[in-house]
Image 1 (cartoon, one colour):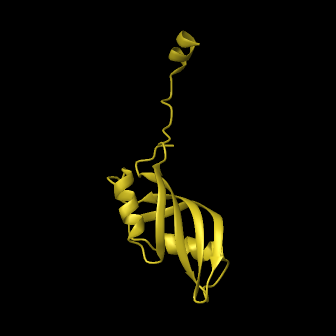
Image 2: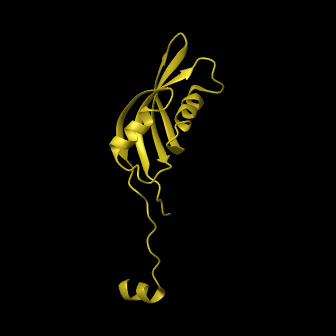
Image 3: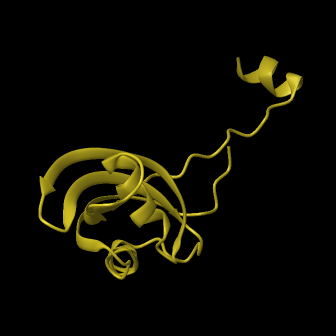
Length: 114
């Protein structure tokens, strides 16, 4: 698998409206997915919930893929995530290592090396 889009892991605190449809995890995921710079949400794990009168604050660890391949550094990623509506805090931003496919070896190479 060859990925050219940067994947970032981060711990977020998001506000989920009290009347949001679905589960709190679904609502928190929708908040992250609506961020302009995010192409897709790869994974989200709820780490804590803090209910309030008008919304519920959800702490979660996410892995997101940004639509712009230039967004590879932690500072840019943190800025883009923090700019999202409903994002209360962004912490522990780390780039995920890119997975690349191993080049295919020809049968002649296999026999010479193995």
